[in-house]
Image (cartoon, rainbow, N blue to C red; front, side, top):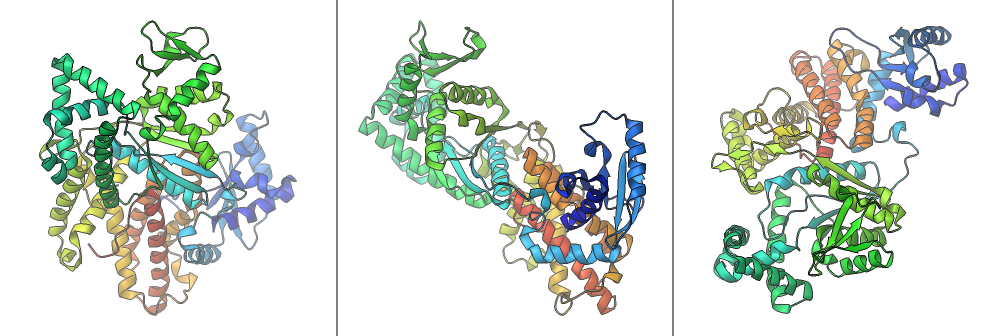
Length: 578
């Protein structure tokens, strides 16, 4: 694997430079594949090596040439050359082939994760809070990004050996429940609630909001209902509990469809009492200030800057979102003693989390530095054939329908045992890849046509490639996969694939550093294009057994790494011909 070659190069460099190999490992990177010519496999960046010196660029080039002259080829490195501020290393081709393919098969789902790039990585306790829909409302499509991004981050951290706790922090408290409780008393029907709970509650919520805007007595009733909730009124709490239970039941069903699970279903309601303790603590530290209207605020600037004022209590004494988030963070530290806590929400909540983290700091919690907000942009233009999308289930149904129509034109679809399930898996892959291709912080325009293209850089193409490679193994695998001769994998197409497989650990490392899935997406799409091109020329059926066996090893390695990467992204690879 890459780290073995990297270490070998680092050891030779360390003898010349008189530096420990560990200091050199991360300056040596696998070279991205090029279609123009057969390039080196690794390069040493002189700039990275000399980053603490004051050398000019021409001087760096001279240094590269001088260092290259002192290095020698050996059983691992067959060629050494210099580039723009780099020293390039070409690995012995037979060794490269044998090592990479054996390592992929041997490491299985851990390929790339055992790299020296991750050596010495301390195992941490990590809490990831994501998805967090609002109770008594159907699963809004706006929560989709938080769900798939949070799932990716949790998958990646878990794969790296960390102890991950996935928390769904439900919006199950707040003034909207005053509105909903009042609305249900005015417009609710028990029969409708039992037959289609979230649809009915959504309709009630829309109706009561309209009424409250026109009728002050409805708004007053809603306010009183929420006060009753905060004071623990049994009748109000009973209705609220019914709404919550029905909602969670529905959400679990939706999460199952998209392959997401949680270790804990928490919620703002858990912290309604503890938020009062937070207010007392802020008051005891002299941080709480009362406004003329009677609400309580904290001045985070200390000098009265209006933009740094954070409201933590309403004038009637009821808690706010920020107060409950503070109580939740303190409780989680007590419960999990986390090393890192990651909140995955849209970028509109950036200021909210900055204030929450600041409040924790001034309350004396130094671990606030361990809290991190991963913000993301807005999806625009997501519509189904029935119009604008409100609910995730509509999107999932649309995905399944469109994908089934696409698959109906493919002859092999009739071979599928469960075409609906396959259609949903392929459609979800399409949705996730479109979402993950760019920076998470970027807004993007949604396009159904682009999502479902079977060619180009799409999730459909990834799934199609995986299914086709799996079919190759099913058809020709028996008897071919015992051993292989590296001499039969020296064509340019084979070498390009091997060089690309070398880079997988670096791609995982980059994503682990910035929590951006786009590095993995780009890598998998390139791997799929390389495999598709190789499949056209590196035939198995018409080749002699030893050639066919070697090529089958290569394609199996591609499929294995493709599946590993897809699973990290939250995609379930399909294994039957489409």
